[in-house]
Length: 310
Image (cartoon, rainbow, N blue to C red; front, top):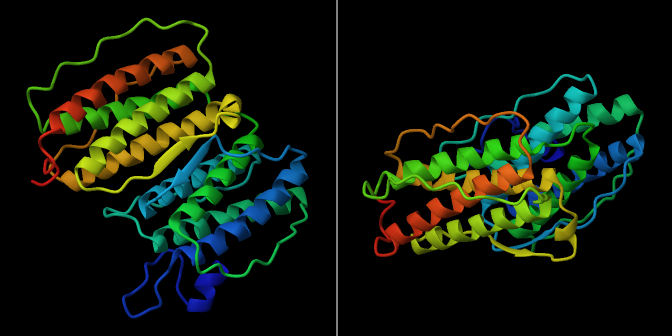
């Protein structure tokens, strides 16, 4: 159990009752900073390099988007434990409502014991840096910290994320868009496959996924939903790897999940299977198809800002 929950006497798997103190972004940031110290101990114990800055600069993050980053980190820590021969604690199911800071805190506290278990196996030295509670911390501050933790976790994996795994996320995002387009029955034409150069690399895939996210942001904001703003750091963007593209694809999926959940009357998405031995060019092509379908959704919702209301 994490320190904050222990102080409040709240089990991490339970939500906060209305009569108990609320969880705010500064509380979550403290927990993330503690986890960062443990993960850095693991990094040192494994002799791995420290992650550079994120290829993304974020502003205006919403709690659901911070939760998305925490879920991504949880899955990576599970993967890390599996590689180290340790038991894993499955990621809790996503709440069937818009995630709040308390959900992010619970998720961070849920994954931290797995990080400490890896550190203990490596006999890693942890150097916690006590940080005062920053009452000015916002969801964006927490999101930036989690983005950096995800980058570091990518570098700790013996088997990095593959283009095939990234394409699975893109296929799921495409399935979500197809469900959302069911609100507009005339928009059912499937996108055409485009020819793509075989020289496509991870930075090019990442850039196309950012384009997809920006289109989702346009659609969501028009429909009355605030969305995180992303700015690409052009220097670090040249050094992205499949782990970064996987995270970007996961953020797309979670944002589309939010729209799907908001609408509430659509069937669950069914993603098309992805074959083995996929490369960056295949993912780039799939992301192009996703961009086409998002353009169709953008056009369909242009004069229907209330389309998410049943």
